[in-house]
Image (cartoon, rainbow, N blue to C red; front, top):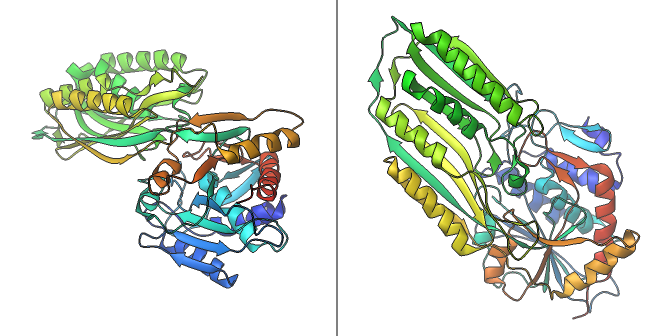
Length: 486
């Protein structure tokens, strides 16, 4: 199947993407892809550096006639989100991505595709390898661990890069030129409880499964009204909380992915089975109607299981369910300054209840620092009222738009010329791009972000549009030809 990908145009881009996707590269486990990229640069005879945190920098001199243009940095991240469907057998630590073509789209078999940010990485690789693409002095910056902490960008020291302009290839709409992004912070609530023992006689247990949701990027898609499996599960539990005991909850996975699935184990008195199933099924039908447009494949499945030995005490489970119900999820505020831009949001990404321990993980994003902390403190207060300890971590800054950017002034007319006068959408995005972090150590660097159409990022529905990749590739080549003079 991956051989079919290699026949797509532009071949230089898709072949490098296929090469990259053969290398396992989940976040936090980038050792193999770091070595892959170092070998790539060294085999080309180019200066290749690995910095202290694992970022790889490859330098290539300007092509003839472009020596007096401003030096540029082309930047993408090496890691990818590792998400798969529950029924997909796949090991991200050892296997390369299995790709296939469906119409105008490249997809993966039951897993994330890695087009975020693999198509950006592949673009830079193709340019480094080419002996015919015109470009100024070029530094290729491949950062690590963007998806789970941006530790590569945070660890990049000032003074290492020499470029005046940074092209970040990590935007997912081909008509968009990014000039700003949101910052973020992780909120983690933890707690403990003394488990109650329970006897099987006279009781029954059910496994409740919420599944079939689309999931997606918790920044770029937070405004779309997609279902959050953790909130849906909590709504079900809340409806019957007085008549059940919770044994376990396992919902969501990654902090930056909208949760697609959640599983809970509940125990109840056997003579209440009929009324409980009736209540849960009725609420499921209500929720399904609410989400019929955005989540047509939503399912809530009840199945009887063996009665577990231990459950949460009533008080602890009521506090937890009330807290998750009260905790904000989704869009918090829209920007008053930039039309249609989400300013602040939260994703309740992970809920784990097991063996006397509670953990709820959220990712709060905002392009306004004060608003980010306002929502973070609201979540802190909510979970502290439920008796949890709350920790803030992984904070990273936003990227303030510069509408007077020199490279922006170059790119807009090029886009219009290549697309029959169509104007690009110049905007900030609600995702967390690395530009804001890189800008802390390189405040004078002119930065811009763009990329091809990628849908469903951070989910197994991730797909890259073939026709858009061709459009984007032509845009990249024209930008490189027209970098301003020093």
